[in-house]
Length: 382
Image (cartoon, rainbow, N blue to C red; front, side, top):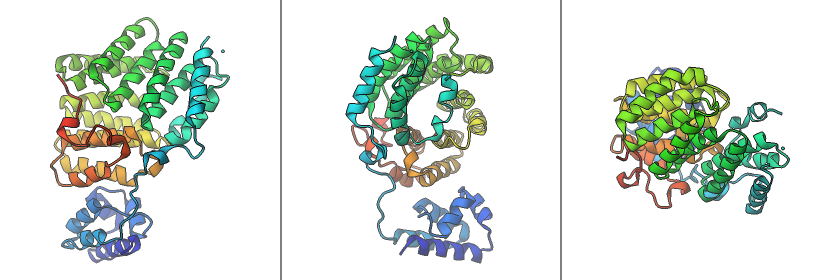
């Protein structure tokens, strides 16, 4: 049984039911263009899609059984080694670049230099960042070191990322951007599930530094999110109100416009304000460029979690599954998988959760943590 055979059967069943691609897509919560690719055998589909189509087309499990009879395929989630760039950045190159940065912290506008980096998959981005670091002035070195630390985190190399965060703080402090780098490290730390008291200390430092130099809204956003993760509800609510009250006037170069609403929506989700969170996350999605594929995937998964919190469990699960199935392999990184794991934490026993759990089997999560297990969750601590 092949992908083409499953897709052909899906097309036959859909046509027999008198539904167009768009009509079926709307009913099962998948994009119509993705369904078209499945029907033509260009995409494999998923067990969740087969189950939903069986339900909507009244095919009594036929599509699910057909999908499950396909030959075993290599998992779409590649081994960790394959997350490295096609043009690899070896340890020696990273070490040399790091030493060069530390030794030259005491020399094009960064806002223009880095406008397109979010359109590049993290594994392909890393060698470009390392090359640009050579000869960068102080301001550029600060931004590049932050981006390298974030990219290493996304690729799962957390120990190397820690060294780059240290270098980023030194570089950013010398360039007057200390508040920004600490806020960005705190947000990255939430994805890494670093100890929350440590992240709160970083966020508090960011807010304190922001009072001395213009730093936009990111420090406040980071602090609000960490407080919400800690379960310090009253403080998180106050921080959220402050963030909403000053966010627009503080929006500057430190963060893309959508990220403020993403942070507000995530805080609302953690506080249980599902409807408000969905509104804010939808607004963030409108502001996020189409070409920023990884950012949009993370946004959609945050929205999926918020939908589940708001009581729209089926819609939340369908959204999360669609993101993981449709997202190109090169954009599957630890940030995306952390956001998906948060969806699973909200709905661990719901129909479709098993499929989501299967998609989350990834090398990043094999060391010291079992995705979806209650004991693995380090957020929302008191």
